[in-house]
Amino acid sequence: MKDHRFSLLTILLLGWLIAPASAGSKSFRLSFEFYTGTFNAEIDSTMIVDYKGPLSEESIREFHNALSRATSEPVMKALLDYKEKHELNDWLYYQLIRKTAQQLSPKAENYSRYTLYKWFLLSKSGYDARLAISKDQIIFYVRNSEDISDIPFFMIGNKKYMCLNVHDYGKSFNNTTAYKPVDIIIPEAQNSFSYKVTRMPDFNPDDYIEKELEFNYKQKSYHFKVKLNPEVEKIFANYPGVDFESYFNIPLSHETYQSLIPLLRENVKGMNQRKGVDYLMRFTRNAFLYEKDDENFGKEKRLSPEQTLFYDQSDCDDRAALFFSLVKEIYNLPMITLLYPSHITMAVRFDKPLGDKILYEGKRYSVCEPTPQKENLRIGQLSANLKGQPYKVVYSYEPENK
Image: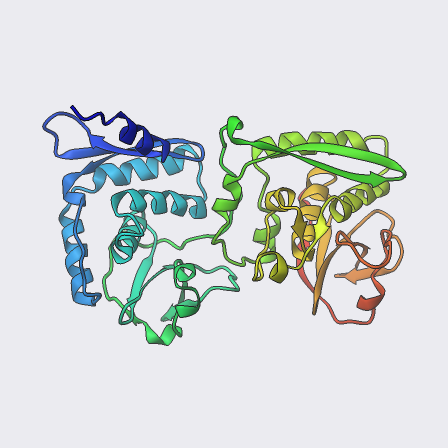
């Protein structure tokens, strides 16, 4: 008799399992690990719909009609219940839908079918998601009203729809006018999608790794063992260029926060506010190597504060976001973000401004440079190569209790 234990173990290790829900049942149980826990759902057999193409509005309509007749309520209830229980923001919920679609129809086996499942599940969840096609490409997009800078979008009337799968095509993505919208409307798909991530998942503490960081301040060496989760990189692998308010306010996960913020608070406890901010500025500036994104990743890539802690190299965008996060958490001071033609930096509003002041809306801010420069800049000092250059305030933070 053939021993199947190894193949079953392999499936389990890959993190998913589809098995009959019960003897004689026409449904299957889908189960996989997803950040905060285990996602379980019963999949009715009618949800397994074949799609061979060719890619056309007619063939997509046939696929949609078959899914519309299917018993989708159990899986939709499981998805929405999980979203509510674990307080998933839209972007994290979309990752759950991606993984569910991957189990129903592996991406590598049939990309169009995989994309159609994502579209159907997201639409049935209430989001206004649409499709467009060219001869051999299927584009999946969702209504969004936020300022997203680096992915294609379509306009339908006065509504903007951002492309969710442009990364799958890369340079082969055509001009948006080359794609023909598929005219299928799902009645419950009414809601706009948000890219804001205001809460990270509660990862399993056992999945974290420790990274040692160190820097010198006032002739003293400071050492940190920061807990980091590699899953964070997967969450933001295809995350677009959101507006600076959304980007700067991406939080740290719980274990990372607890391994770093209390220690930073302890280290600045005996310092006055200005010296404490100076300490955080120099930590952000000197605890990591500098590397331009083009050299580090081959493209522009904004790192969340937790990603900046994870990577050995980072650039000015990443340092600004991390510095903002640390100052907000420890001192909660007003701040502005200054965007120059080739650089971004921060300025903090103290009770008494220091050095060269930045005047914004009648209030004075002191530059705090979190990125290494040729000069050893103190608070209130702007790099010589930036003086006289035009800048724009792209984000202003004012604490509610100030």
